[in-house]
Image 1 (cartoon, helix red, strand yellow):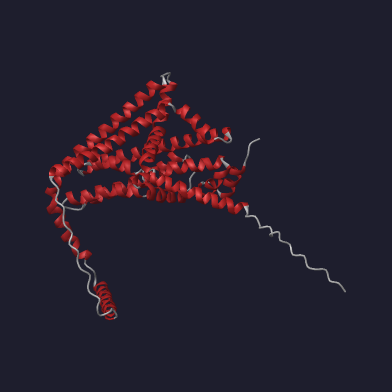
Image 2 (spheres, rainbow, N blue to C red):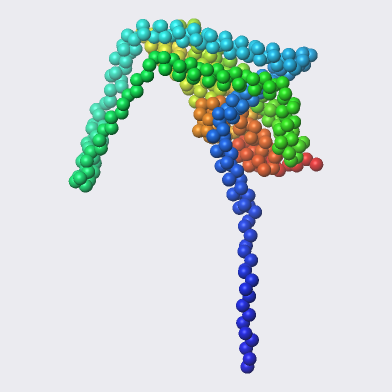
Length: 395
C-alpha cells in the first residue's frame, strides 16, 4: 500500500490583522501625549495667546453692541480697548495706593496681634489625652530609629554636612533683576493687548482661516466654532458681572466695617473668583487676617466673617444660578478635573483658563465625530442625551 508523501507548505501562515479599535486607541493615545507635551513646552507662547483670546471673548459683546449703533468696527474696537486699558490702569493705581497705606499701618498693629495670640494660646494648647498620645508617638519613633541604627553596618558613618557658600549680591544687581522682571511682565501684557486687538479686528478672517486649516466638514466646523464662541463669551460676561456683583458689595461692606484696604480686598476678591473653587477661599482669607490684626477686640473679625458668609450664600444660591443658567454646559466634575489639569500644565493661569477651554472642547465634541467622547465625558447633559446629541447627523 503506497502512502502519498506529506506535502509541507512553505507559505507563511497569514497573521491576524490588528483590530481597528486598537489601532485607533494607540493613535489617539499618542496624539494626546504629543498634544500635552506641546502644551507644556509651548506655554511661553500659548499662554499669552489664550489670555488674548479670553480678553477678546469678554470684550466682543461690547464691540458688537457699538457696531449695532452704526459705529465702524475699527472705531468700536478702539473705544472698547481704551476703556478696558483705562479701567485696568485705574484699578492698578488704586491697588498700589492701598498697598502703600497698608505697609505703613501694619507695624502699628503688632501689639493687637500679640495680645490675641496670647488669648488664643490656652485654646490651642493640647489637652492631656492629646499630649500623652504625642509623647507615645515620639517614644515609638525613637525606638524605631534606635533599632534601625543597630542593624546598620559598623563602617557606616553619618553623612557629612555640606557647607553651602551664600552668594551676596549688590543692590544694583538686585535692582537690575527687578527691572528686568517688571519689564518682561509689562511686555507680556502689551503683547496680550495687541493680540486681543487683532483678534477683535479680524474676527471673521481668523475664523475663516481656522476653518480652512481644519478642513473636513466645513458647515459643521463653522457651527461648532460659532457655538463655542457664543457660549464662552456669554459665560465670561456673566462671570464678570457676577464677580463685580460680589467684589463691589464686599468692598463697601469692608469700608463700613472699618477694615483697611477695603477696595483692594474687594478688587482682589473679584479677580480671584475667576479661579474655580480655590479663588473665593483665598479672597476671603486676606480681609479676615487684616481684621484680626487691626481690631483690639473680635467684633471686626465677626462682622467681616458675617459679610463674607452672606455674600457667598447670596452669590452661590441666587445670583450664579440666575446669571449662568445653562451657559457652560459643563459638569462640575469636569470643571474640577480641568482645573487640576490646566493648573499642572500652566500654573495659576491655567486655573483661570480651565473653564473656557473646557467649554470649547465640549462644544467641539458635540459637533465633531472624532471628539464625541469629550461631550460624553464633560457635558452637563445626561449620558444618553449627550450620546444622542453627538451621534445626530443632519440631513
